[in-house]
Image (cartoon, rainbow, N blue to C red; front, side, top):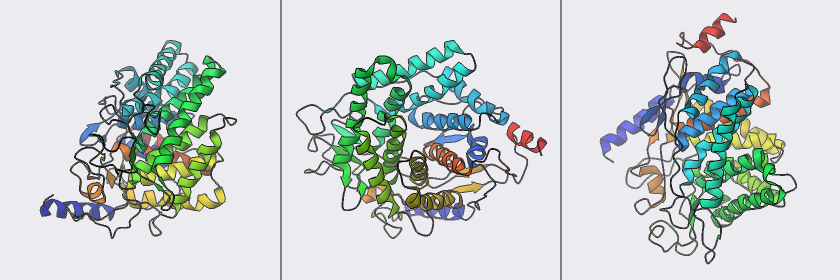
Length: 455
C-alpha cells in the first residue's frame, strides 16, 4: 500500500468514527438498519439490494447476500404483527423466487443462502402459498443433501476423518467460517424436516454435524490463549496448505475476529435445533462456553467491542502498511448476537454474560453506527474479506495489510446481517414491539411515512 492510501484510510476511519451514533434506548435498530439499507448494501465492492417500495432487486446467490436475507426474514418473523414490516418478507421472497441456486463443487460458502428457505417455507404455508412452500422445502433439501452426500471430506487415513473441506481447491482444510455456512444449515434442516426420515437417519445426521464441530474445535482451539485459530489443515505440507499452515499442528497463525464470530454463531445456531438428548449436545454446549469465556477476556474495556486480531490491542500494527489493529464491526456484531442467543437458549450463564453482551451492544451503536442527514443509518469499520491460500499467509500483517483485506465503511453485508441479528436478540431482552425512531429528515420510505402517520 502507498503512504497516500494509508493516510486516506486512516483519516477516513478516524473521521467517520467521529460521527458514530449516540445509543438510543427508544430505537429498534434492527428495523432502522433494514429500512436504511435493505435496498442498498455492499458485497465487497459491489452494490446490492433487495426489492423494497423504493428499489428494484439487484442481488445474486451468494453467502453474503444470503446472510443479509436471512437476517431480514428473522426480523420479519419477530415483528410480523407490524404491517410496516410486510415488505421485508416480500423483498426476500422476491429474491428467492428469482434466484438460481449456484452450488459449486464442494464449496461450503454456497450453501449459506439456503438458510432463507426455512422462514420462507413457514410463512408460505401460513399465507396459503402451498406450491411455493413445497419449492422452498425442496430447495433446502437439495442443499442439505449436497453437503451430506456429495461434499468432499477428509479421507480416512488423515486426522479429522469425515470433516467437510472448506472448498474443493482447499484440499483437506477446515475453516471456522465453514461451520456457519454448511453444518449450521444442515442442522436447521434437521430441526425442521429431519424427523420425516426416521430416527436412524436423523441420529446419523446429528452425529455427522457434531463431528464437524468436534474436529474443528479439537484442531483449532488454543487452551492457553482461549481462542480458535482461523483454520486447520489435515495435510499441512500439501501444496494448498504449506504456505500458511503450521507444519506440525496444521493450524493457521492468527485468531481472526470474524472467523471466531462465524464459529461462535454456528454453535448457538446449531444448539437451537440439536435434540436435548443427543450425546454430543453436552460437548457443543461446552465448546460454546469455552469460546464465550475466551472472548470475554478479549473484550475491549473502553468500547465494549473486539479487535480485528483478537489477541492484540490497537498497539499492534502491520509491518508492510503500518495499519494498526482496529475495533472490527462484523466480529463484534457476531459475538454480541451469540452471547445474547446463547443466554436465551439457556446454554450461557446470564449472570456472567449479560453485562458483557449489554456493553457490547451499546458499543456496536456508539462505535459502528453512523446517522446520516437523510435519517438513514449505515455501518462502518468492517473487514471486507480475508482468507488463506498460497498467496495469503494468515499472519498478523496479512489481516491488517493483505491485498484483499480492507476496512469497509459503507455497510458491507458481512456486518449488516450480524448487526441485524444482534439487534433482534437485544430487542428480545427488552420485549419492545414498536420503534420510536425520529429521523433527522424525512426518509423516502413507506416505513417513515407510516410511522409519522401513527403518531
